[in-house]
Length: 443
Ligand SMILES: Cc1cc2nc3c(=O)[nH]c(=O)nc-3n(C[C@H](O)[C@H](O)[C@H](O)COP(=O)(O)OP(=O)(O)OC[C@H]3O[C@@H](n4cnc5c(N)ncnc54)[C@H](O)[C@@H]3O)c2cc1C
Image (cartoon, rainbow, N blue to C red):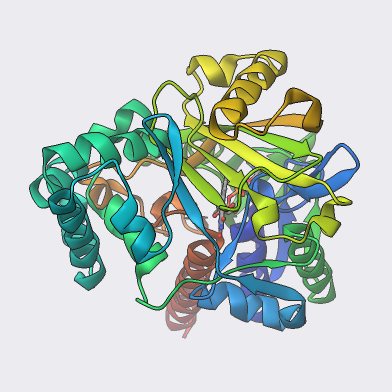
């Protein structure tokens, strides 16, 4: 291969795994990452005296691509697995929602409604290909299967929690993918984490990338990529660096801004992809609250999507004996809670915890911190799959590989790594094709 110098913009899990694959295929890879460290959404931060994932992360036993990476990093025996409980907060009380018995006892639906809900889940599990569902709205699909009351009581609050007011524009493939991820195999799902959290994975991957010769520029925001004498010029800081190929792994809107080499139509297409952001509170407590990992909040008067008690999975010794709970709210950047200050969110979090867990008192809080991210996942709106850009672009050597291209997914690291594999295959094939064309022209 002739054109070997490749830049990857974005050092999240996608950019890192793509860099590893391309370095192993003989490319000279440079990663440009805006933040001071690698990892993106999976990166760690400090919460009081504890360092842990800024956003809650678990892996599932069925996450094959992720487990292969963890084994390759030599971390397989540092993964801890557990079956986890979940719960539902509805009509002013928390109800366990893990076993068949919990389901039978669940008071918010009649037996007939429970049967219809179970049939909806079974239907989604049986459906092997979600592509046809990308053209159908999630609301009519769920109403047709589970009925109106199940939709109003269960599905609407869950959809609103994850998708906000945009839920009625979203395709049925979203719920299909969510159900398949949680219940896909039929076997009871096990959840895992690596000792030290994602920090351990990111640090080991970072070290492996360096051993493979990948150059990593941290704290470096790429401003522009433009065509430049048959190469691509990448402006970062004051410097222009030249590459044969550039891959943008950032959210689509940022890619549109950076990629001046693209046509107006391509940039408009990227800009049209709508994103959901998040405001996510981390609360470190001196005692546990419940026994569920996730408590789904089907109550619109509570401003959070769910309560995720990390220490239901992770040994509290990892947190110096403390207990970590996350309170996320998926929201766009104009949402009043996204815009609220940390003090206001702390009051809202405290109120929510007091409603969910009567034993909670504000004096139990040892540390509190809020993460806000404007672009977490692209909303899979109806017909979305047909509007997505591919990896290749009209600018030779410039590629887009962004999590927005994950159709039928739920946004998780496993899917991100699968996307990186497909993107690497595309780029390698494209380079071989260009090389062959050059040889043919020369010979
Ligand atoms: C609250 C939350 C919970 C989650 N829970 C789970 C879970 O339990 N299990 C799971 O598997 N996954 C989970 N995920 C999803 C997982 O974190 C993502 O799938 C994955 O991290 C996406 O990686 P990415 O590289 O595609 O994107 P990102 O992590 O967003 O990476 C993009 C990178 O590009 C960089 N960048 C942007 N602009 C520029 C620029 N101009 N120049 C240079 N760099 C730039 C950013 O700084 C960032 O590092 C969760 C995510 C969130 C937010």
